[in-house]
Length: 110
Length: 473
Image (cartoon, rainbow over all chains, first blue to last red; front, side, top):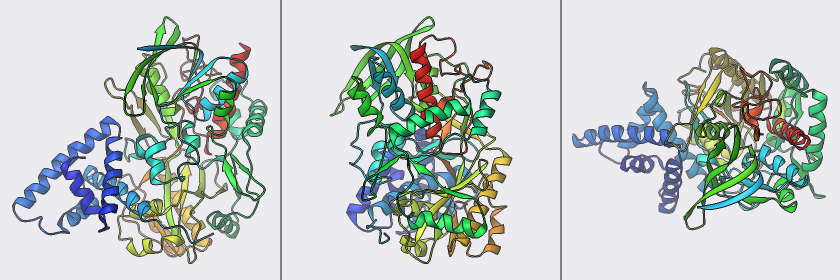
């Protein structure tokens, strides 16, 4: 994964357990690497552009604190730009699936 | 570069390839099956789990057809193909559809009676049955809702065999047809990707392939073959043909069942170990309603589809199950192999009519789930809204738009359609690729359209039929 993709995954994982965080990152990394080349290229391009934007915000002190990136991602996810919205949703889907599968206890129902 | 030779080469080992390998090996042909994915013990991984996604699915189960909206899709990539990862639901091709396709695409010997004969044999060979006891709660919810609304519903049979204690085992290709092919002398080469077909005039003389060994070493192979069956699925089959210079009517006309979902919360626990077997057939074949895999990960993803906070619902995940509405689409798509890229570009164009049908589907699904006792419905629509009462469902009619709908599918077909109408088909009535004497397609690509039901029964029956024609030729 690219540096910004790692930051996005770290921001989206809810668990504080380092083993869970590491396992989620591993799954997302494998999934991203396994994507068709044209989709991987698109994702990488967006990661670079959005990562540069986030870095610019950080350099002027507008992306500080633990939850700042998460809040930015939230705003992108519900924002008006389709490709940006889809970028966050794609990353969130992978993180959400992996984190919840790792946290899944046996079902109580028969 | 190592060279192998075989009489019949089968590329792909799923519903089409597995049937093809077993039937031709049974008939005494020397068969070699090559499969791009790994050979994984069918009992080794929990169904629909993280590990299974990483191991048995192509692209970790996160493939995408580009369009407006993009459509996520999943397909198997392992020995046994998608039969290893699907829910095992089995539904014969409806007679009316077979008759329609026979006429519209001029398909020889494609009568309902003819197909029924092959379906009988497939069902006998594999084991197709309904549950021996009562359905699990997730499936019973569908039945209950349909009964309250007066809608037709049915428990679909599955490719399952049950023991005396009622424990079911899915009869995947790796448990059935592939061992049968091996017993009849076939060879299966896993982790082996066919890069292109080798041609000599109007004959295919073999393939060039790369095999990954444990430890990462890659071996280049040339496999010579007298006859080649391409059974790599509706995406990879046309991509391989295109990479090999065979482009006429290959890859265009992709069809699928676009699907929208609802995560439904009930006031009691719901099972999560199996996929519901009941289907609502009230609106079939244009719209089918059923249940999806609902492990905690799937539920969380479905809840996240609205983009609204869902922590409260997720904390109650044991009371939630995921259901779907799938449509027959009038749109179509394309598979395009791009030089230099290993994976083809897949596109799909949903029509405005498709979006209307999806809206109708998700509203009907909502009606059904509320009638079944659900207390909260989270639709796969960005912005929702989450619905708790019947009179709130109307908000979804206008919410299923290109920018807000989250659409997915697991059924892809029709990229090398069969039939005698050469303008519209890539292969003849029995899967022989036009212009080639010894090259056949025998998988979901041949279906002229998406059938509106799980396509594996149709794929298997048509594959068996085509094998008989080949053996008689």
